[in-house]
Image (cartoon, rainbow, N blue to C red):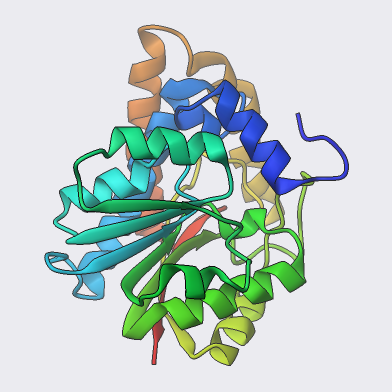
Length: 273
């Protein structure tokens, strides 16, 4: 439960201290199993995007992972051959966990607010790829987000990539929770352009697996009915839950292929000039 007013460090420190797992960094209240299927969809979108922008071979490249949490994306990119990784998180719980989890690997973890103007000075390097997956929409203050993108600009090598997730087709500043603020593509195009980035690609992530916030009213009604009335009741059942979620994931990918869009999140690939 988010306490008012939303204080990012306190909120995430409490949340990760309680749940250092996929639900702790993912969709709260839906369990680890359901979140694991959501992360499978994110991986598919990231891999498709990397292949499209011809970044499939990550060997020798450096990564900065913002909002590392439990290190899901640190682990993923290290397994893809990233040469080195720096992870940044606002919580002490995350940094302690990550330092122990990745002991002996070419990783470094730094506790910091990603909007801190001193962050580029502290890190003292630029990176080939910066990831902020399921992170930037938690920066609910526009001024703090502006500072965050300014930091990312300073920390990205020329021709480097920023990979993040966003709804993109939501109303301006739309949010249904105090720790979330979605911003439309026009907002991102303006802010990224001001910082030397251009959106090169957007890959849809979900169709039925997450609550719909875009699309026609009948489509949103259908998606949200399935999400709230069917998926919520079946997904945690021991046997049928796996069958249902596996089938729904397949249907998700089919719908994305047919309609080339999501009813919620996209993985966005922006390149620095």
